[in-house]
Image 1 (spheres, rainbow, N blue to C red):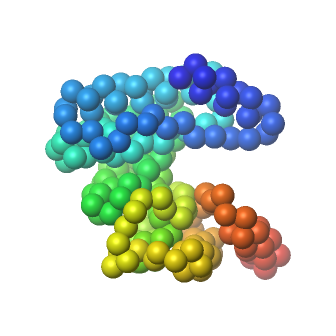
Image 2 (spheres, rainbow, N blue to C red):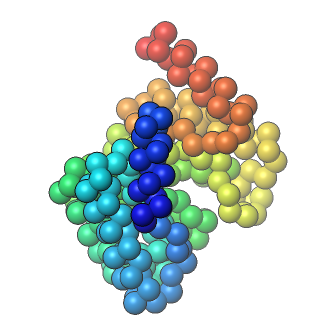
Length: 206
């Protein structure tokens, strides 16, 4: 955590913001999930105490999604509650497809519980992602759009690089034109260039 604070401060000196993620997904015991929740709570303290331009990213399975749905949700809700009290933000990371529905359900549940300091991630390589985005639009969500890194079958995911790029561009257009706070997450230079062009075009023709 000390290293994360140091690196974040260095990034801030360069005008950058960041997100801090405690790695430890696919937790299968209550004890480990509780421990992971404590570690992530410490990140919120560090962000607040050091005035960092950063937020906490949480993998739902790290706080107990695979252990018990209500138990895991309570752990996540405690983090989002603490963040809100400190004026901070929490983003729910998206894991592989066995957890997609549950993750989106947790996000909607948090929003219905009155939390607006929480966001979600959508993976462009999933064939379901357009429908998921359109479902989320009613919440005026904060969405981080990424390509996706988990190995998925061709039944649920685009597997060819150009197919994934094409879908990413399409999904980004939907997000940018809607009432969302869109975070563009990619290392793909072609997608970076396309995103810059989309943002410039929308700025010129709002």
